[in-house]
Length: 243
Image (cartoon, rainbow, N blue to C red; front, side, top):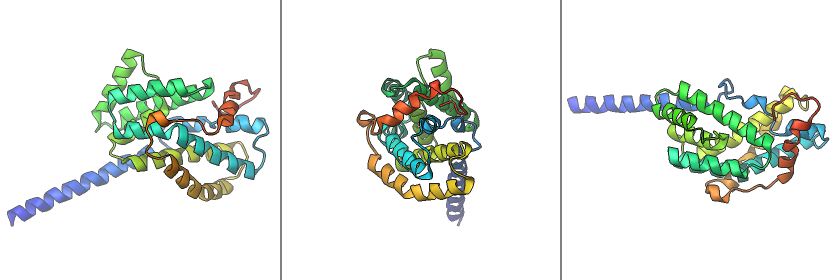
């Protein structure tokens, strides 16, 4: 009987540990986490001022193209960092992505969000002390750019996410942020934004599946026009967002 009781206690502790881990995982995607994502429109503000997005249908098309480009260019970095959440892989991916991002606005947005995510994660998820160690070492070396996609994959990998969930989460966060930006730009109302997000969800799943589980060496741009438009953000006469 004592053996059975001990086994039951161990099972309970294991179940409790998994449950607590889920709370940390959910917090990572909570919009209240101060990572700075809502300061960026992912090129939407520039696209609106360039008259490329003027209607709800244009907005939906833009969101779909953005998610496709996110899948083709950034999911490989998220995937590789998730399956190998270590310092060497992270630094290699960070340097590679810095070389691949072709416009200065997008590059700065990526490093700003990635740096914020790493700072917040190192402070919040204290049960993973290596996050703080890795961040401090990177800051000391001065050789790390802290691009968002590799940091996202790294943190998710250390929090126990599987690769598929992490990649879907990255696409979801991108969709959430750009639709939030559309709301603040008065392209769509709050209810319309919720409807749009629900409508795009099946397409987001299809695109996630399409680009899922690819090595960083396979990363590519599928919508170069979006990259060009985002690069024009710095020339806008007035702007609400950083990018």
